[in-house]
Length: 105
Image (cartoon, rainbow, N blue to C red; front, top):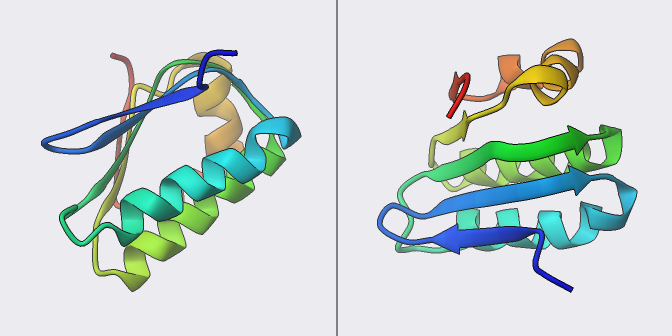
C-alpha cells in the first residue's frame, strides 16, 4: 500500500493525497508530530492539494499538529485545500486556528 502522505525537505512540506478518515488518524498524527518536533524544521506546512476527503478524526490529527507546532514556536500553514476539504475545515473552525492557509494549488 502506498503511503498516504509524503514529506519533502527544504522547507519540509507534508503532502497528503487521497482520503483521510479514522483509519488514517494515528499515522497522520505521528507524521505531524514528527515534523513539528523536528529541531531542523522552522515551520509546519501541510499541502492538501491532492486530498479529496477529510473527516473529523483526521481534522483532530491536524489540530494535534497545530498545537504541537505552537508549543514548539513554529507557524503552521495549510496550502491547497479546495472544495469539500476546504469547506469541512472551514465549517469545523480549523482554518481559524492556523497561522496561514491558501486555496488552490
